[in-house]
Amino acid sequence: GNSVTQMEGPVTLSEEAFLTINCTYTATGYPSLFWYVQYPGEGLQLLLKATKADDKGSNKGFEATYRKETTSFHLEKGSVQVSDSAVYFCALTFVSNTGNQFYFGTGTSLTVIP
Amino acid sequence: ETGVTQSPTHLIKTRGQQVTLRCSSQSGHNTVSWYQQALGQGPQFIFQYYREEENGRGNFPPRFSGLQFPNYSSELNVNALELDDSALYLCASSLQLAGYQETQYFGPGTRLLVL
Image (cartoon, rainbow over all chains, first blue to last red):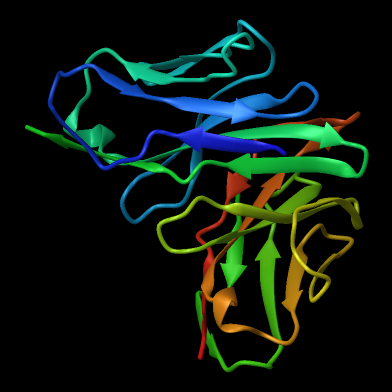
């Protein structure tokens, strides 16, 4: 079946550390891949996306590359800030014969300490 | 530009009851998706409505049903509530054109507690 598996948290990093949050997926067809972020007290919002293999999504210093050969979409940031503390969700969407389908991972909580 | 709004913010029901949750989509959007998010989990897709028709459904039983209105707002109805239905229900709106769906914008959610 279709699914998204992401690295379990919580993750705690010091400011300016390098961040990687792993995400792998299983999907039929050709999914689009996303990272969403939920800051404390706020709703889910799109962080970045990639719609086809080898695409790189980027935003706010975060990057993720759509790797079809390893079915992965790992999130990276070279130097995290305290303001990056949030819960991060990997997600995919594809069009099935009955319409759109969406799958989210379980979320990874990141805390950045000064 | 008005964002996605949901009502009510919180709700308490008892087992066996029925509940209706409401969502107003962002201006200019024609598609609404509903998700269930249990505590500590990621959102699970319930269904999507595009131009008043269901356009995709996740693995939820028929007692979860929905509607989309001509102004693109939407309702989620859940019949015969069970304890496991306790969760945060999220609505997301987006613009869909020629089969391509643009970015989803999420509302703040309705927290449902079933006793």
